[in-house]
Image 1: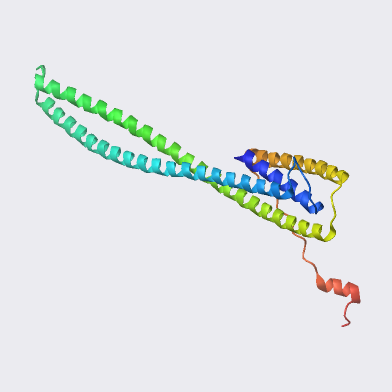
Image 2: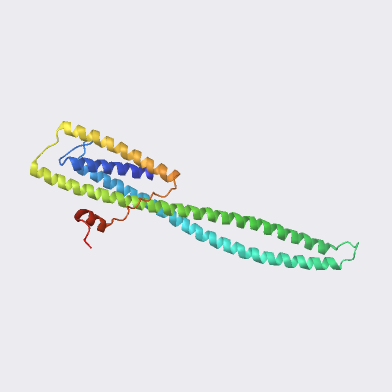
Length: 248
């Protein structure tokens, strides 16, 4: 996504420079200015398609979270019931064991009850591990959802900015065409070559700046410095210095 936005931003910046400085027809790979602006519009449309993909992924995350919540809630209810059953059965067996005389061997039914209790405990532990895993999955899904929302916000902000730039470019081109009609001036080869070279330089600087900002966002978390305020001006003192102090 960032790569696509950076490419379109560079194209828009370069296009604005050329139209601003040359109010006549110019070509880049056989394209007129109108063709290039149309191409920018098509690129913006593709960016909008990318936004739709993010929205789809957000919807999938929301549904997954809903299902995770329902499954976790149901499993927690089952575990609560199973815990009560295990504790009740334990107390019953302890009470039965207390009635067995010292040295007597427990009967077969008691031993089977203990084995059943052990299976209940093992099943409870298995479900508890499953519950823990489901909760971890839900946390990961929630983090993904937050990340997608941030990506969508950044995407929309970039699209809005580029929309404004392209609209400005269209306005500048319309003004350039109007001037062309009035002046009937044509671009000579030397002027076009200079414009093309200048555009390449601007594109490179913009690309470096975009990469610099990206690295800053990844590695810096420092607040912007606050500009120092100028000391208050003593207007009465200035008047006294200009016209002299009043006589008492």
